[in-house]
Length: 149
Image (cartoon, rainbow, N blue to C red):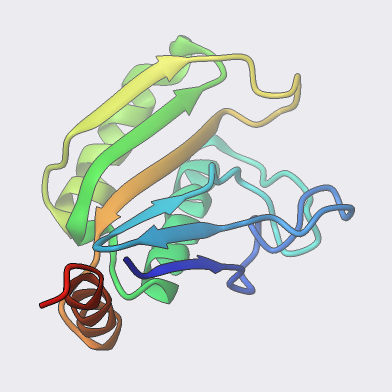
């Protein structure tokens, strides 16, 4: 099976507090798993405003998935972690408009968690299927080779 670990040069997943190279997306066969994206700018400062944070997280996730040859349109599952469920309704309104409106409805999970005691209101991660294309073709070839086909 074909496996790749990617470090795309995108904002919040480019670095983690400046001291570790952050694995942004891991692909194996026909799936891609993103790391948890948090709403930070390219200098790793927390972005102001709830809606700006929501958008920054999903923009980063889309960049990661694009680097793996897929997109949020191919999401198998989206996992959302909110600092406080007090923003749940606000997040749902934004999610329905931005994510569902742009990519279609997806299986998702949304839970409340403590996020590093910061002003970060949201973190999310996505598992997605790999689209047909160059990477998909490599995965098919590697799988056939492993199976002796």
